[in-house]
Image 1 (cartoon, rainbow, N blue to C red):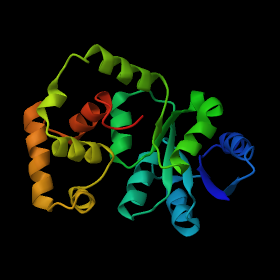
Image 2 (image 1 turned 90 degrees about the vertical axis):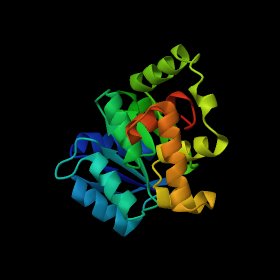
Image 3 (image 1 turned 60 degrees about the vertical axis):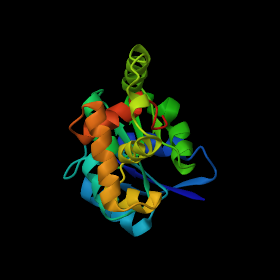
Image 4 (image 1 turned 90 degrees about the horizontal axis):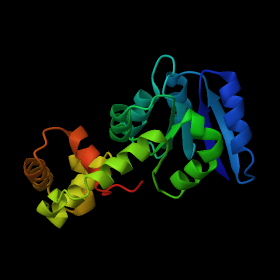
Length: 211
């Protein structure tokens, strides 16, 4: 039985999400939170498989909730719900450790698919913003900058975009932290980038990160 924790400050939204989740006999809602701090506490206490959290939560936003759980090495997959269609928010969500990004207007149609993806270890992003990012990728497909990166540099960029730290990347790739930093700096220099957010945006558009 897969456990789902729902965090939203509106009871009608929580009830709607619960109704969708409970259409699956192998899923159970094991708790509800009405603010960000409560969401973190319940996630750590009950260890749900998935946390569905609204971006605009009292006391602590959905992004802050995800950052806190990531810092505490929680294995709960975070699915962020939002009404805002901003590319910057999408990038911040990935960096905060969010594994799924779903517009509230898409929730009824895509919630089951999103949860299934996260339970399977895959990220899930949908909505107008994703369509825009894919469109931008196609428009700029002639850009051959990816060919400038070595296979190892692309691996490092991909893991950075997935929210991993230099230390965790070094463990995953069996490289020293200094070597990871070197690959990261080299990739940023070749691509003419100066921030992690730019690397994440690049990885999304070049499909180094699965969508």
